[in-house]
Length: 129
Image 1 (tube, rainbow, N blue to C red):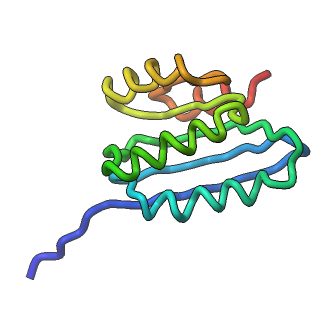
Image 2: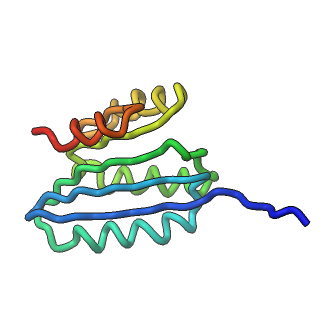
């Protein structure tokens, strides 16, 4: 009997220093509505007591395979609601399509957003002032 395994997962970590939050996400597989039902309340709960939260996000998307349709809608809603709170977003990926998507997304972002292939470079940029 063969084992049928599909990679899917989301890891989230958040550290707080005053009004600044350092968020690390690692995405594997395709994001779904259920993923957003779990992680959106987690993030919103973490920042709820801050008067003017500033989020620096490191996203490891090397295993990311996109969204299902409901997940894409959830992502758009989350982005519209929290856009001004994201100061910097560093996305680590390994595909030209991800890079093109990040370059397109930058147009709509309040803060800075950059694509990296090297995780170390991404973290250095994210933590720089």
